[in-house]
Image (cartoon, rainbow, N blue to C red; front, side):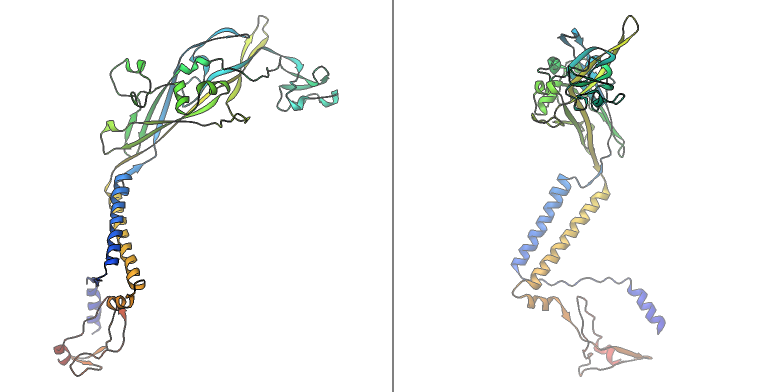
Length: 418
């Protein structure tokens, strides 16, 4: 007996149980269900597969290298340095061709500085004094130009310092000296790679024409794949005037985006450029603009060192590369289809809630959906099968109840009498 029970238990594992469905003749719930199904279908096909390409495996870990080169010359004539011809080796910092570089468009020059004693600038608060005790010898001037000597100079009302004299010229530029830098050109060469798909490409148009890069200038409509940009155009596309930025400096971001569908041809994967100003532009803000200082050192005939100090203003270019590639893969396809089927199931749950708890005839629908069954257990004695209680027509008397979608079939009359 026990062996038979265990055998039946293990064999029942391979039984397939199907659900029981109740067809509700309710047009409102039927329309709600079909609208929900249609919405899910449009979401899966339109958004997941067509818009977001949910059938593709994605790779956003782009690897890239950027090489830059500037060209252009400008002639300046200043009081301190006279005529000077500026080339790329003069106005580009650093000159190695990196993805972040600075182009000088304006400068304030302080020539022939030598180490010695001179008065601190009156624009430095820590340099002000009334007597010698205010100028502690050997103390550095905070945000100043040198070391205090211990003397207070009545002629200026500032401390005497030991430093590079004369001190830096302090005035605000009125116009950009390198105004013609607007016509300088920037050559941006970008190599990128998506490691997951072993896909590599460059933003330079693949052509055998040697003259192409010497003549073309980037234009979104006519030359979208030319990697040479006019400096004035970069500031214009960022929404600002070059001459305004050239006066006090600024920062421009050049974003190169590689969004590639690798299910298409190799030639369809091309960069898109966008331009924006990164620094805060405000006429009343002391933080607007971009400048820094550097010096050029020389030796005179006697071997003494002197220098020329430059406070330079200009445009800093930051080149940023981002991208994402996609290629068909069966796994994300199956996952997204499965998610869609799960959403379909949510529609069944929603409509069940409306039908069973929110309709006027919800009691009727609940009674149709859920069945109650009463039964008495059958006991076995050897080869004779006896029922605890049998009705007159030979069927089991029903007592205990449960609710569910599964119905246990009663034994036939011949089985009971045997």
